[in-house]
Length: 117
Length: 115
Image 1 (cartoon, chains in turn blue, green):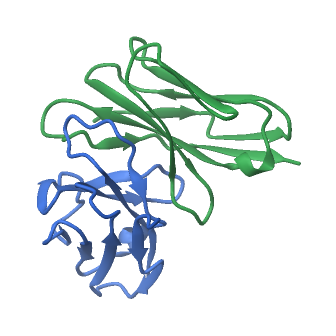
Image 2: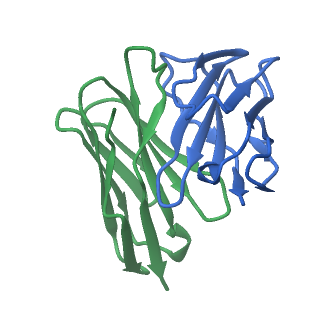
């Protein structure tokens, strides 16, 4: 069965470049989350989609970060004018139910490891 | 800002040992507590979602308990095996406001089981 798929697995970019990270959630999953994980820390929430609607973007660290899920399935996280502090693992997760009200586990992808030189 | 704390940060045990670690969280606005196992080069895997005070859940040699009144959860591994080596993450699902139930993670406990 297909799980959550993220691409690319690794991305190296020069400071100032734009990057785009892709997430393919499990088919039929309503909720989609993006997290950022810095070395030695737990994942930190970035943004949440319920179908195509971005209901919470409170965790996006700056206006350089932008996420979309235009058709309610695949999502893209875009980082413009990357900085060294953007280097992290970016995790995508999906769950079947919409929130609030759901207490189902989130299904994670393998993540994209982003390194900014 | 919610503060989810896990202890210890890392743990080394011998194969066959039983072990446990702790997740502490603010008890207000509690909705659910998630436990995940994250092996190197793999994706985090859900272990348990716990919602009720006094909840106990079990999956093979791994079990977890929950105390929402005092704000902690314990994860137990009985007879640790090398394949249990991973980072164990707990995450709080909070209710209310506009958080839409986003997960707030602890920093994780890194478990290494030596053969």
